[in-house]
Image 1 (cartoon, helix red, strand yellow):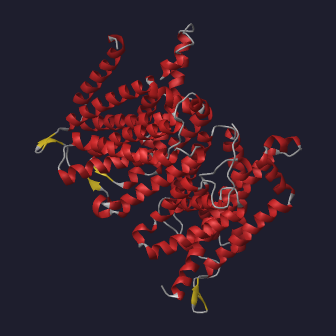
Image 2: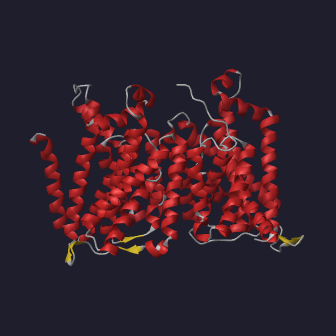
Image 3: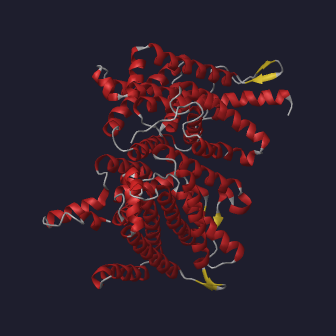
Amino acid sequence: MTVTLALQLAIAGISVGSIYALVALAIVIPFKASGVFNFAQGEIVTFGAYAALILTQLALPYPVVFVGVLLIGVVGGMLIERTLIRPIVKAPEFTLIIATFAIGLLIKGALALRFGDSPASLDGPFGTDPLLFAGLRFNPTAIWIFACTLLVTFAVLAFFRYTRLGKAMRAVSISPEAARLMGIKVETVYRWSWAISTAIGTVAGLLVAPLIGINPEIGQLILRGLLAAVIGGFTSIPGALIGGLAVGLIETFAGVIVGSTFKNLVPFLLLMLLLVVRPQGLFGVAEIKRV
Amino acid sequence: MSLRDVLPGMVVIAALAIFGAMVGSYPAYLVSLAMINIIAALGLNLLTGNSGQISLCHSSFMAIGAYGATLFTARYGLPFWISIPLAAAISALIGAALGFPARRLTGLYLALATLGFLQIVQLGIEEFADITGGVRGMKVPKPELLTGLRVSEYGIYLVVLGVCALAIWTARNILRSRIGRELNAIRLSPHAAQALGISVARVKLTAFALSAAFAGVAGGLMAVVVGFIDPVEFGVSASLRQITFIVVGGMGSVAGSVIGASVLSALPEVLRPVKEYSDIIYTLILLGFLLFVPRGLATVWDRLVALVRPAAPAIGSEERAR
């Protein structure tokens, strides 16, 4: 493998990995705040892609589409949280897992009804001509995705560290009861944790659409996002970013090293291995449970 | 076992046997599929309903049963009544192998591990196309009793009926035995169970192996009845469908598996006029039951019985539901 090829593969890996990182981030935030693991996140990404498609067809400029998709995500997340999640937030884990799965299937079913199976495409904001730099080819859309992923990650980090709501979210994730006694509105925290995570999900859909096209199967991304979240340790924001990039890189290099037949299997074998050996992830802290 | 216990079952079996002989091949085919769903639901319910382990890969064990049985028949000419039990045994072994790492995992982590396993099985089927036919699927040879001696469609119907009855009987007996009580014990409190001398790890392994065996049988029968298998049939949506069976029917009860699988197997036929909405309706039913009837239809039946006979003894009433 020449250095150029390796670097080129690394670029490809990082650009798909950025999307996985966004999906992982969207999974981690509500899990951190309310302990609800959102298996519907993949379908929310698909939803974002279709929302972007519709807004673009209205001949709106890209920045407006971007903000529109973001707002749709915020409102959609609040709606889902209020109507479907809040009634069962204290239910057993089984109920929560299956319920979020079912929400995903509902979104997928509704999208299939409205749009059918026919794929659509969406142009990126910066065209498709690759940029040449130091003998390497950069896809402008991929750079844009990477930049957005970095921006979102640092924004979320800053949000948790410096804002009132972010601090409240951290408090609730440690102990909802204690947080409530300190005057934090736990419901507000849950609502915003969903709003932020679905907004990241829908924006991920908008970003990824030019790269992989729009079809009902975009939701499959969640499997990679899950792996990224597991690598990152479920509750760590930088972990989600690193996990996503790692999954992208592993997948891309696995394609060259072990051949395309096994390329798709590698992430899942890794997932099983990690869950067995180190379920708290590489960056997470093992949870100590008192009986 | 007294006659009073066996008689209602016998009557139902006889009625279904006569039904299969009288109606055309399509209704009989639908009933066969419903019975196969019951077998799969029974297995999943032992694992999820009784021992409390989440599994998103039940359909993978059906896939192992279906592909295993078909390959044994197609490659080595084994008749279905050898190839299906053989495939179910392999499925149980793989189930135990999956149970091995799963012993340490609970809840969410187990859901993720089983989801990963499902992907591995599905991708494995797709990637090894020269053995499994890949995404294009595989035709299943017509079932033969011995080489050259073909079984009629009605014959297969009777086989499915017999196996389904056997599966219900087995599941009932498992739950009434030591292992059944152990399964329930590790769900209700793993720590208390461990303290009472139950090896939680061993029981989890057993639960995975048992449920995989049921799924393997169901998968093998499905391959024979449908005559064609492809990996799409064994994806995550199939697993969720089976979870819907036991949620709607009732978790942890044999009656629940039977009721849930029967009712929901009939649903696609009922929804035929609004076919494009059927996926959404199906999911809404799952969500509705999770939110409002978390204990399923089986308990609704119990409550109705309790209304009619308010003096029913409290002790053992839970046993009756199982």
